[in-house]
Every structure is written in structure tokens, then in C-alpha cells.
Length: 110
Length: 113
Image 1 (cartoon, rainbow over the protein chains, first blue to last red):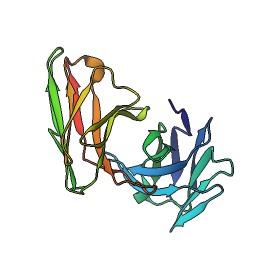
Image 2 (tube, chains in turn orange, green; image 1 turned 90 degrees about the horizontal axis):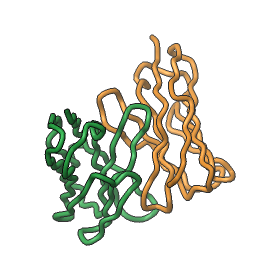
Image 3 (cartoon, rainbow over the protein chains, first blue to last red; image 1 turned 45 degrees about the vertical axis):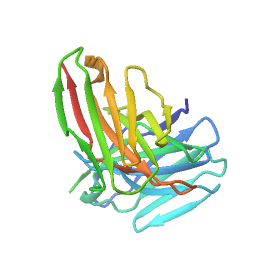
Image 4 (cartoon, rainbow over the protein chains, first blue to last red; image 1 turned 135 degrees about the vertical axis):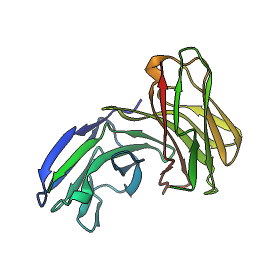
């Protein structure tokens, strides 16, 4: 099946610092999704990227899809305590099913 | 999302027991999925269904079976539960097409003793 590597596994930051998580695939992806899961909650969709080199922004969050469509990143500028949670990438095999990365758990110290 | 519900929310069972986890959705989506979440492993796809007559195995289908009783209902069964099936199970739905955000239910925490 699809192998999707996500790093780092954990990240501890001081409030106000930036945060980045990376997702890498050995094969070309058709698309990639990002989800956030709060502690004790369920994954919630953030965004989907489809085009090579695509960059999308949502307030302090910036999502990128690599030119080769094999990697993606999520960057949070000036983290806040509300950003705490685990961030997952989900690599699309076609548009039918997705393979999730292992997630990056973000902790933000106030 | 309240549009996707799972029952039960928590379940403790014993090795060898048969157990069914149920998922219902009111989003009108054709596509439904069952995932399993283990610490450090992310979410792994167990089964997925694109309509009532379509059932597909995912990455880790061994030891599990599913039933799509209606467009809105997708059940996951463990015929003979074993301890390494202890995990958090999520149901999800999505629409068709190239933009297919997945909507997850609240999850079922299953413990097999």
C-alpha cells in the first residue's frame, strides 16, 4: 500500500513560535489532505491540495504541495494554545481512498 | 460532526466475542469508511464502500467484516475479537468527485481483554 512518512512525530513549542510538519511519499500523489485532531476528538478536515506546487493559506496556516507531488507541508505561524493537537496528512490514491501519515503531535506552552 | 454518529462510544469485550460497531450518517454521502487508530500509527483504513453494493478491503481488513445496510449505515464487525484489536475506531463519509473532504464520527473506543 501507499507509504506516507510524516515528521516530526512530536513538536513542543513556546506560544508565538512557528511550527512545521512534513509529509513525504515515495510515489506521486494525486492529491493530499490535511486534518487536525484535538486531544480526545476526531479528525477534522483542514484542506485538500491537488495541483503541483500549490500553496494555500488559512489565516496563520500555510499548506504546500511539492512540485513533484510527492511531499507536502503544513506551517503554522505564531502558534497559539488553540493549535494544540495532532496534525495528519492523508495521501490520496486517486480520489477514492486515502493513506494517513502517522501524525505530528503539537504541544504549545503558554 | 453530529452528522456522523457511531455506537457504541466505548466498549469493553472479551477475547473471542463477536462485536459490531455501527455508523450512521445524515449527510447523504455515498462513500463511507472505517478506520482504526493506534498511538503512533495514524489512521489505517479497514474497509470502504462507495455505495450499497460496493464493498472494498483497505489496508488491514483481516479479522474484520463490514455490512452496508443502506446508504446511511455502515457497520463493522469483529467476528472473534482479539486483544490486538484494542483501538479507537472511526467511521467517515465523503462525497464523490475530486473534492472529497472526509467527515469523521466521534469514534468508538474498543478494549478487548
